[in-house]
Image 1: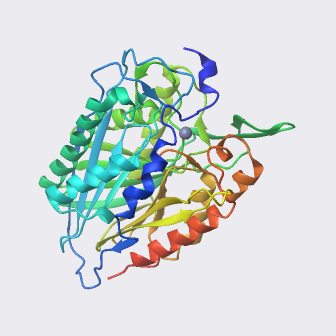
Image 2: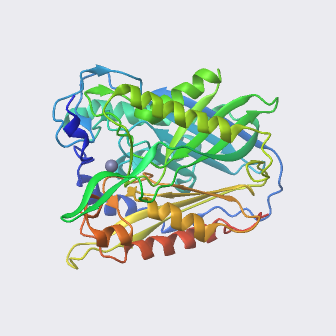
Length: 431
Ligand SMILES: [Zn+2]
């Protein structure tokens, strides 16, 4: 493979086409929608996870690198759509869907949300779609991928409906650990910011981990996050990259368990070293080991591993992000919040958010005795980078994908606080 092809993640082959149709597609959604649950009693959970293989059977175009124009040659690792359904004792539900794909287009979310609304009466605000951003997956929006795209949508819906139909009494717990896979990839130089490893740059190396255990205590599913591009590899084979291996290893080490990866705000983060399959595997093992640490139940830190109780609340809303050209219509940007009882507040941002969003929001939302704050990126909308104000003003690769108005960070953060308020805020338990 050409090492040079890894130097700049163009996240291309998957261009700004989605943004054109976005406003129309999302206009039909309510600006916000919250699930009120003040009077729900706190009691038992139900949960279930399911997985469906989504590896393309044909040599389709691949997504992620502009310079890689030839189709895939084969499969190194199967790709999956996975779904985790959670239900509180009052029947409140949330559906967390993770995908070994480059991103979640507006069209894909729209179709899946519509299908799950029809099939299982799930409201849009209760459905989160997150992509690992693997750069060895299909460009499913390509004109050559029409049949695959339709099967992909069916597969995602099949995984989600299976998870709902298999809901069973469960215990939920949350823990966190740390893994040193990511490195900031923005390096200052006399000619501007380079796409180059920067060990002094900001990172978010936390590994938030939600464990689902059966009533008997057996581990049934584990949902874990990390903020780093899945770009160890750029060859012409299907691969989930480090996140694919982390999921694979966890499922091997815990037979009968489904492992789901949720991508964080890794817009300016890369795994290093890169370019050889052994590194994708080693990064995957590092991350899987961190998840094992997060699952450890004998930690003395009381917040490390906490059982969750309470109810589920979810809210979804949009915020208009303007561009420097006032004639260009603003982009409708999705923000989602899911509060899982008293223990976890999950905020999901669209597109390729840079790490400053995660670091800032965790700081602003954390409250004494409040839930753990989990910030996901790459959710519900793709493509395009969403730089922080700092990154935008510094310039460089992540600042250039769209002509953003520098106020975008404040707009996004303000909207997050509004959406979080709709799920009861980030303070101690809401009942
Ligand atoms: Zn990217």
